Length: 141
Image (cartoon, rainbow, N blue to C red; front, side, top):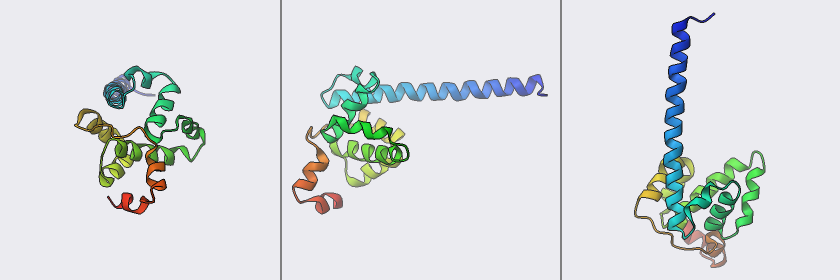
């Protein structure tokens, strides 16, 4: 059996962890609100289940329906990394920053939202790069 002190210690640790997580969710929510506003969307749209993901995918790729790929187990984690990479690109960030966003998105999203980043296109960034025949040149930037 656990002693009262061990149980109290567990409760304190759980409360601290939950508090930190809740605080991050608030910051992330505000950051996504700002990102949506920068891209010309209403901030509240991010918070609507499924519609927020649709809008974010439309913002990034120009095709909102692509968010349904996030339901494919095993592929969805890889797709989220691509999502965050392209999110940084459509806000004018260089390749290095964009790659960092794919891996360290909790911090990089805050930088995009609260920094001087501007939404540079509402076209499908990936199609634009591939169709223009500059995929390799764009990747090198």
